[in-house]
Length: 112
Image 1: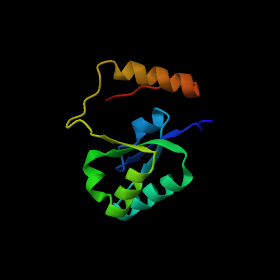
Image 2: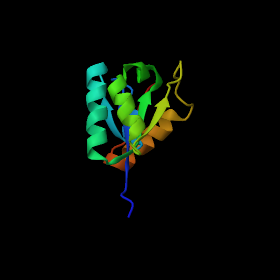
Image 3: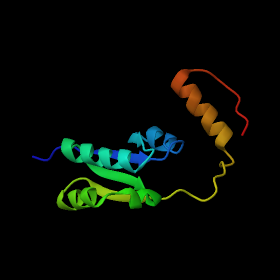
Image 4: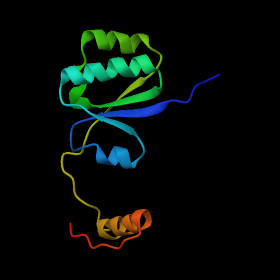
């Protein structure tokens, strides 16, 4: 019998919101020590199917954690990058207003 697995994202501070809105479990990582501790905990729980990390944090993975990830069947390690420049979509105002109204029942005006 196969156990259901979760999707976990390790993220820089301030870049986690989109992942949370998408339903992912997110842990904000400040330094190399915190990252490797989180990898160890993830491997111990055996609940995570995919562990996503920012590509620029890959160098933070210690040799011990790298070997442990390689030996384990799960989680699969996925790397992601952020666009160099963010810009809101033209419909961002309408979309955000509608989303807020559906979730909390209030209309609001947003200026981007």
